[in-house]
Image (cartoon, rainbow, N blue to C red; front, side, top):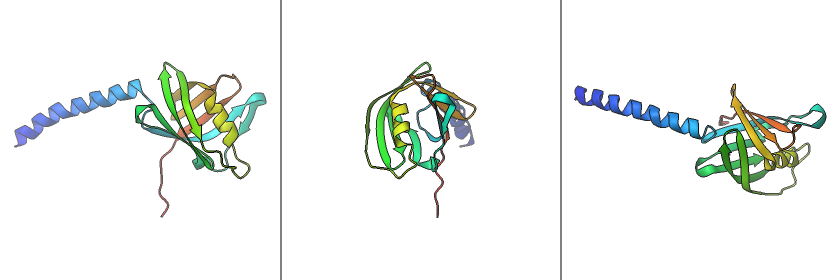
Length: 145
């Protein structure tokens, strides 16, 4: 039995490592969640959400994106090609959020997203304007009991 376990470990561990490495290199955002830290815009403006946990991006399988945008929910299809980042088929609810909400600015920037940068534990999404970009950090759900 010990020989069988060792043989399985030798075969399974490298296979898992190979599979995980391949997925990470092809789709580095797949199965990750990100929380908005700030939106930067024209004239060095900075917009920081009062409740960052209300502004989330959840990159799912099959190129599906789940978006939390303050009091609204949205969804889209996402694609990566090099550092190009494209969202298509975006749909969103349109509730009127309590001010100071970043809903409109957040959704507009996502709709105009063109590139992304991933590194140092951060995600940066840049729009088609040199002045507008968003900074995210990884989001880990912490239940409140």
